[in-house]
Length: 358
View 1 (cartoon, rainbow, N blue to C red):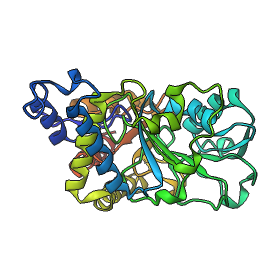
View 2: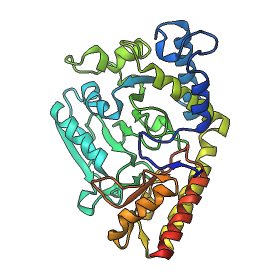
View 3: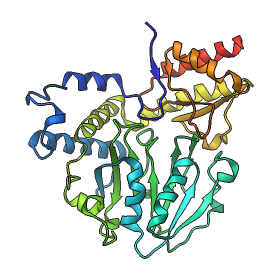
View 4: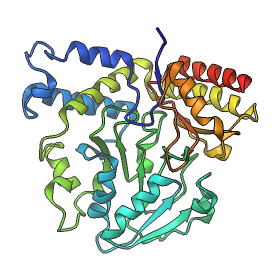
């Protein structure tokens, strides 16, 4: 039987051991006689799941005590609206556009107030992060919004600019937990779960305490971060099963040695694939080296008429979901935390074989 490796950009691969544990606990969680999917979100069983999930996430990211961790619904797209609702009142905001998702964030936020583009690489086809010195920042802005890893375009930040007293709001959906980060450098971090954490439907928000309580009066309770924080993310029924799976992933990461160890593995995986792409004229990647994503690696065949043949052969070899996003084309390999290096080795071996035969 062919070994399957799933390179989907999201919903994405989960650790096999996590799926096996969820399977074992599906009908009866810890002797409760209930599946997590049918528990009351206010019962002691689920409350314990939520509390442990938050504690483990805080440990993994060394989240300071003056930050709240929220488990919300709607994915990162919902946060595109919740961010200005909670922070933009009577001010403007600066957005940096480095790919399709940060461009979408601007479009969604514009209906709530004045959004200024501080920097953009769209004219260069989103192949890099604009030099920080070129950013036109407003020192009186409510916040600076960035997407630290662009899933579609394969662009990743290699550092952070100095924004002074203006808080940085970062969409980290596709590389959160892939490396250590200094949470204290951000005002808000948010991430849809379906790429590197768990199932779709859950969004994690990490927000500094002093940024709570600023929401517009038109903000309903479910969209108000302070209200959600005061109610432990349960102003309404949270996405309970997605939180449960996220908690299992957090446990898995801790057993791997935490984010420092997973970063070491991620560097090795990305290097293996990029090194091969750079070694041949048959494939190419157009992202500037310093901004190449470790998680999402787009690549192109020199002869695009071979694209369908490449994908058909890859599927037969058990290498799934390699077709590039429709807005970019080509191929894309998403190699999140749960992708073992054996999967990348299998992909490189197939790419070599395909190139030699064509």
